[in-house]
Image (cartoon, rainbow, N blue to C red; front, side, top):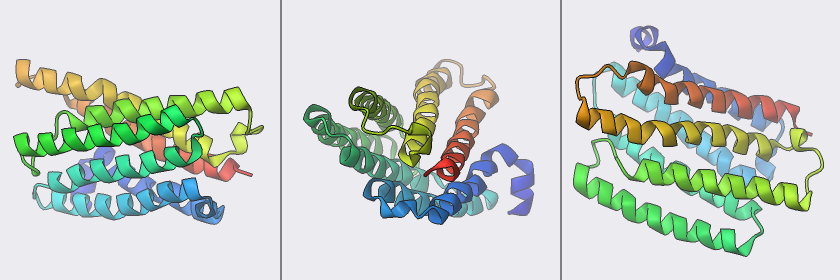
Length: 214
């Protein structure tokens, strides 16, 4: 596995960076906040799944079944976290509806491609809804001014990091599949690396934000 990490440092980096926000959130005891508890549990699951997928990749074993499972788990945790903090009834209704739509597209993807292959529609649907939920949450924060010190509010940093990461994925996913169909022999290395880079940024933002928390 060490040789694999040396050969694929960018892909491996987010696995280890997940430890950073886990440690800082634990140090700040942020898990006592119910909304952050959903994210905290998500990070713990992510850490175990990431290391297991890294191990399988180092052995040349298909790990997409676990990545596909992670898409569903992460969407559930983030949706639950944002449902808890958003007070607007319309947006809360959209979150419930969004999860139903996501589940339908998730099942459709698995039926079409199989659980051991890359999902095509569900990841894009996930990104779209998560971005909408976060922007709705930010609007609510600014509109109500219920949090005076955003820099000291850990959930602000979680949502900021997630917004950056999922915005990247929303842009990358359809383009990647478009080129995969139109130009299957094109070198898409940079395009493939971008989600790993932004995932690393996501973990760093959350970790630093937790340290800056009140």
